[in-house]
Amino acid sequence: MSIEKWLSKESRSKEEQEKIDKMYKELPQEKVLELKKKKIQDLKKKKGEEEVDKIETDNLLSDIIEFKNWLNQRTYLKGDLDKIAVRIQNLNRKLTLKNKELKLNNTKADLIEQFRSITPKLLEEKTRIAVIKKINGTKRTNSDNYYLRKLKSLISEKLNDASYYELLKIILDL
Image 1 (tube, rainbow, N blue to C red):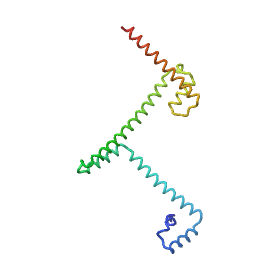
Image 2 (image 1 turned 135 degrees about the horizontal axis):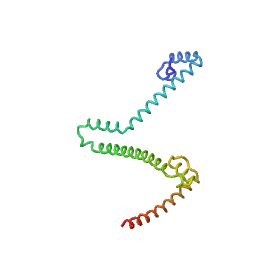
Image 3 (image 1 turned 90 degrees about the horizontal axis):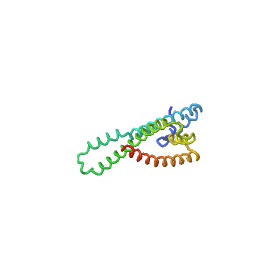
Image 4 (image 1 turned 135 degrees about the vertical axis):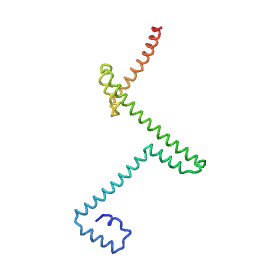
């Protein structure tokens, strides 16, 4: 027995509806709950399958193949120039977004490795903790923000000094 029989009441005659209501009332409460749970699980499965389909359509390669198939079906491309331009722009936008995501993930991993190579003596403990929080994207406190601002000003001073040292190095190499 399925609970769908009791859910769709529009397509039934009065006699059928009374018969179904009578059967429903005769069912034990446990069976009714079991049928409801089963129906809810089936609905969740269907919804999950739809979400998987949405994720797959985001795939860049499938979009390119879809565009290729669409383009192969066209016989008169001059009339579709606007549509082609829009689809190419959308594919290009998706490609740049994917590249940015990949670069961000790669640079973040590289930055973490490079940060680990810095000697602990270079930074104060609280400043180091604040930088780690910033790298990991965890919530920072006001004191963490203070130490990051302090580090930023220190770095700008050191970079100014570094440019002078580079000039002195060039002079000494002459």
